[in-house]
Length: 95
Image 1: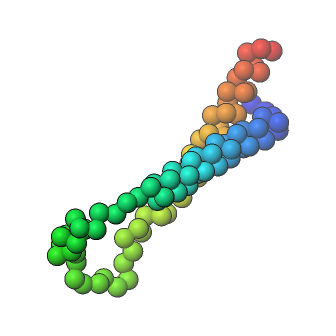
Image 2: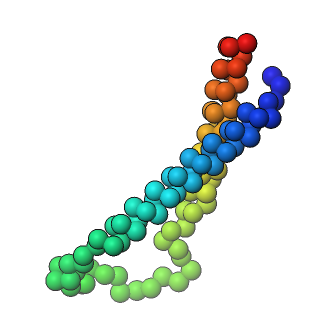
Image 3: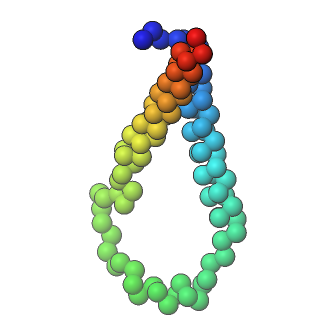
């Protein structure tokens, strides 16, 4: 199998556009949810006793950012490879 430079560039651009659109959707959805959020102060005050009264030093609750970066990279590579293979097979079938 020989590499087709044009298909490769198209695949990378396609994957980048899909991921950019996905991230834009996530940001827009977060902005809308934030703008429309109305806190229920009375109900929140009743649950204050359930809060933890100690602070843990040196621990991050969102310590799994590495996995999300790996998943985004895998999604990018997967989209690009899938697009490339579809274009390659379509050209091979039409030739």
